[in-house]
Length: 388
Image (tube, rainbow, N blue to C red; front, side, top):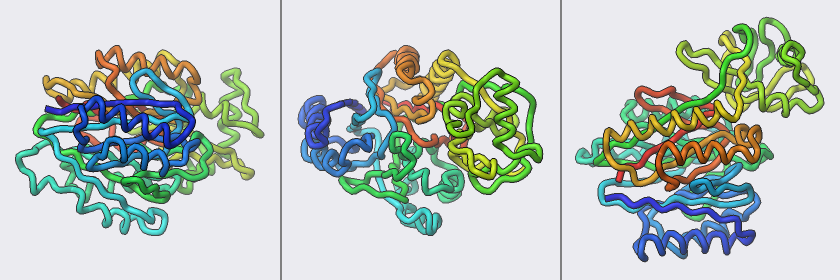
């Protein structure tokens, strides 16, 4: 049996917010300690104060989480808030570890967390999953996912996202206990006697002709079709009757993102800045030589994608009942939809038949699972269904 408790608060005092969430968990578990609590906290709060108060009230065996760019529990959502999920189970096992120094040595950070993967010691828990929360501003998130896949021999489903800071793009943090770490990754191992379902979907459609990335350096696209990347966006704006303000391109970028053609799907990348040389910096790496298209979406397609991701997560339970769900979506999606982001949450609740879910808006979303679109994404809904 697995119990999942979720909570959300917009109390302005970090200590009060943490205490409220911890009390909510403790009361709903009848005073029993949770195996794990996952916390998502706005940078408006002093993280440590929230975490210490949360820990004192419900005393979880494991406490992890990350800073975020919008937090929610069911359809309750806000900025400058905090949300949690607590899990207590006799059919699941949990372990957690943190790896620091991603920028200096991703390999060393991975080495620090390799001991968290204990499936070989627990053969009676055949379903293997790991929640990965990383400082996406440290870069190399796609490579990190590949490292973890190789480390685990591809036997774990991976999901999660990049810590955020309310679109400031200054500094993001992951949580391990009451400690906050920048330039780090935290991993929660989830071993289960029952299937864990994961769904992945975005609602963006290609608009225009395929293009070729002719020069790129990491997350910076220098040229597309041998033309400065910024000029390509400006020409697209002219063709589609949109406004592209080179001094303030973000409003255009939020509605016109890049899709990397992966054959059967598009992996999305959000443009973040137009540089003086005409290049564009994106939220994650775009390889030279990639075929890309500019992508469009609206509220309806975002809701449809959330429904499809939710349905896929439910299907992954293979008929088992659900106890609760984790949901991650992009900070850019929240910025683009504004108050209408709640429509996406309602679509998730309707599909799941439950508001017993929690999560946050992240800088990129992580998914590596059989039969799903894998890797490091932007503007993509990730749903994890936890079995009862």
